Every structure is written in structure tokens, then in C-alpha cells.
Length: 131
Image (tube, rainbow, N blue to C red; front, side, top):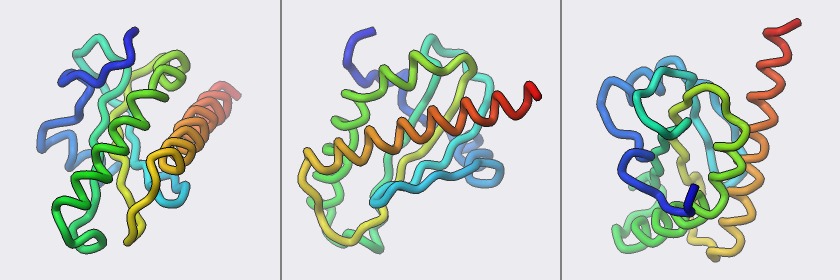
């Protein structure tokens, strides 16, 4: 797959968000929190993702938008590792949890670490279910 981030890969839909927040499991790698849930998706991608930067932490919209742009770019570059490992469909939301801006390179390293931890958790859960 190409290194794009298409509309099909974005998590939209009120019901999925509500289900994700009520039933989802979470992982944290500062400055990110990943909330994920296994679900059925009718898309060719194994995952749909939403990215969020809380208004209460980052007051100015221009700064929130910059952070979201950096997060999208970091996810786009590193999503293939996740896609290669997923055998089932997942939805997740990645939330920025710091109150200051970061450099793009630092965010990309943290995003990669977060996605690797997500893959590891999924494998552990799968192994646990098999035993």
C-alpha cells in the first residue's frame, strides 16, 4: 500500500466513537494516548483512526492544527507496520496529551513507539486467547 492517509482510513461516525470511548482499551506513550477497539469494518483497510488534540491543553487553534498535521504525517509514515500485523479490524483514536508543542521528528519517534506497543499488545492478547 502507498503511504497515503485516505478518507477511508479516517474514523468517522458517532456510533463508532461512542463505542470506542465506552468499550475501548487504552495504551499510553507520552505524549500520546491510544484508545482502540476491535470491530467489524466494511473497508479495505484493517484500521480506521482519528487524531485529537484537546482544546483544554492547546488553547490556540493554529497550534492544535499544527500538532494534528504532525500527528497525521507521523501516522501516515508508520501505519504500514500496523497494517502488516493486523488480521482483524480495529478502530482507534490517538490523543495528544501534552500542553506544549513538539518537534515533528520527536513526535514521529513517539508515534512509532506507540504503534509498536499497540502491535505487541494485540499479539499478546491474541496469544492469551489461544491458550
